[in-house]
Figure (cartoon, rainbow over the protein chains, first blue to last red):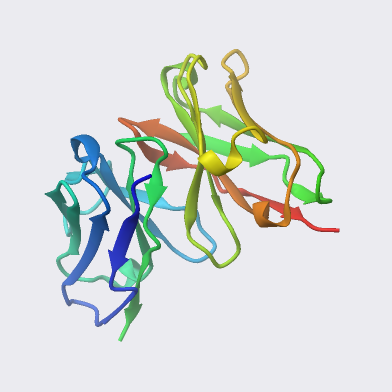
Length: 108
Length: 117
């Protein structure tokens, strides 16, 4: 089973700042099948990025994903008020799919 | 817009069974793999099970094999999760999701399962 470790656990930033979230895998993610999700309290997760760097439909271009192999990054170029949430990475390259433990982006 | 509506959650005693349903609409249901993901209260996301569009191929989290069964009825555009021998640690919100190129692209609102005596 591939273990995903996200860092930091919490990121305290102000609107307009840049957010950089990390996701490290315990072994190489097959075909870079790595996704990022955003979840707000009381809501279902929303797909942001798939295949490490492809934005999902309707996702603003301030969200970008990068990385390959075992190291992946989600970058939010300029935080908007609605971006403060919890972010999860997930690998779906090999069964069992696994999720990271999440990074909370909070308002500083 | 894709619609996914879960139902069937509720309170069940330890050792009991429950069947969750996910009614899908506004997309070609049989063409897409589907997935169940759960989230315990205050915790992160945990993948539960996935099924191919035809229903022929199924996949499970190792910890759940033998207790949970995923299935689908493409004639009814409905996904199911049969859960047996339920334990307190199965308490969670259960989400169904449509897959797009392997990732969970669209999610339902979730249904809460509480396992307690």
